Image 1 (cartoon, rainbow, N blue to C red):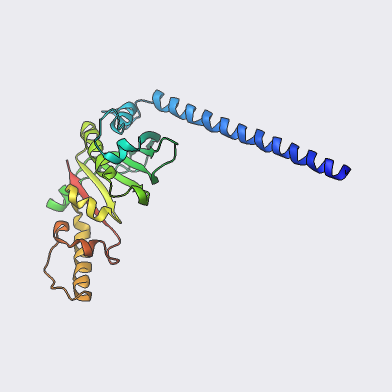
Image 2 (cartoon, rainbow, N blue to C red):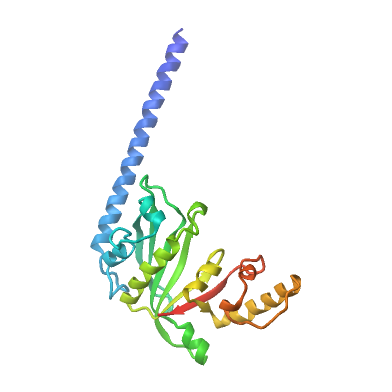
Length: 248
């Protein structure tokens, strides 16, 4: 009997300790989010942000403020939040501002596999200039690093909506080009939005296309243009991904 009473006492004490610990962890999480948000508001002018502010970035991704018409976004009341922003340093082509945006449901769960990560590079190599002339010229470039929706939210217009909102922000910052590495569904999505192959990747993709035609008994006709490749080829196992860009 005494053993049972002692055991129940220990279990209750352990439960109280666990609850207390959970409460402390939740409080610290809320405090961290509050401090981060205040920091973002205070650091409205990072060294390499210049023509735009942190507030501009937050507002650019604000679905309600921009009155987006994507049904999934409006029906499920999806919202965005700026998770991180900072200056990053390196050589002249890698100095940039990096920021990450999340898309969340009303219960605060994310619909992204990875946050929307973008880099604003004020002095990066312009691919269009190099592909046309073979000469290196520096300019303002945005690099779309990551944007992966979870499976249930793909092909519902969310990606296209985000792209259109970003376009306004990029132009306000003075971007001359957008760079990215297209993978998975992006191999089709981005080409439909006017992106073209980086000339450094043209030869490799063309070689893969020739191999694909041979393996699938298709007549090979030289393309060297992302718009001319069949979707079945671009989504095949042969093509893992490729570098593309768009001039603004």
